[in-house]
Amino acid sequence: MQRSIASLLTARLLVALLTLVIVSFVVFAATSILPGDVAEVLLGQAATPEAVKGLRTAMHLDDPALVRFGRWLFGLASGDLGVSYANRMPIAQLIGGRLLNSLKLAGVTALFAVPVALTLGITAAMWRGTWYDRVVSVLTIGVISVPEFMVATSAVLLFAVHLKWLPALSIARDVQGLGEMLRVYAMPVMTLAFVISAQMIRMTRAAVVEALDTPYAEMATLKGASRTRVVLRHALPNALGPIVNAVALSLSYLLGGVIIVETIFNYPGVAKLMVDAVATRDLPLIQTCAMIFCLVYLILITTADIIALLSNPRLR
Image (cartoon, rainbow, N blue to C red; front, side, top):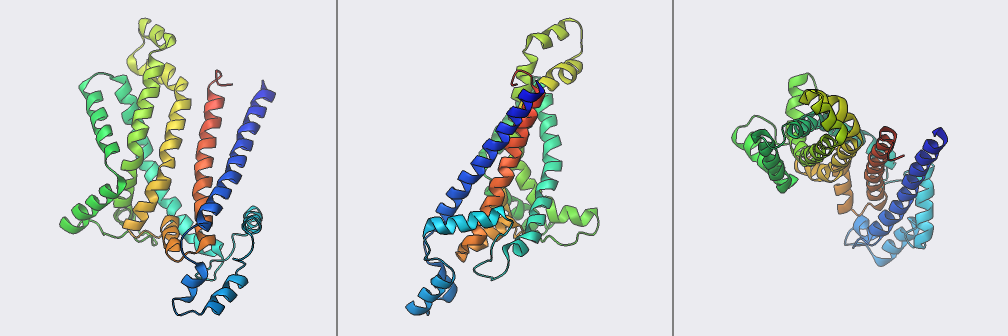
């Protein structure tokens, strides 16, 4: 049994690694066909053709695509992220502080959104068919229907422009005290929480409802167990795999929402850095930022898959 579990876990990790290699090829190919010449963007419109050609040669942009891809992939594997075209600085140095800011934003959002979403999803399943369940379902559908850029814009207009409670821009600095942290992160976290909570609530509710409809849960109810005990002792442990997958999928939505949120609130994170890099055709920086997002997504999905595998004997 232990050998079979180990082989399954190894297979999952190998699949994740192969997926990462395929994604790296897709990212490199997608960034390579971006319109515009990097050398012309860096030198400006007044650059002569000779200067543009010389810069392309110096930056190895005229090398075959497979050669450039192999050089870039080998650098990533060895920890060398390369040098930014626009800033002429090591990409690791540019990303370091920005990545920490993005992780802070994602962490605060997860600490707020995950407990709230799981509580709403589990309680809605417990009181299925009641007015509480209907209210939660209607609010969830409403939240899913609203895109994150609209939530962010509405939050700025309401809390920053009209009420003047919160700053319109979220500058990640050394936060002194709880009050200042709430002011800095309130609107970005609120927007991202809207993005990830709705799907998490719906998937959690569906997983618990499915577990409550199983024979062992019905038998526990017939024996006189309370609704809370049936959910916590019987349904919830068996729904752990789908719930973990729901959390992982919902947190992965942060990867898309964080780009819009960091841009609107001018939050100095990796997504904002990636958007700025697209404007300057800074291909190594764009590729590295994209790979960071892909790596985080794969880590979340693979971790959820492994937890679901270990928690559910039927999957093994």
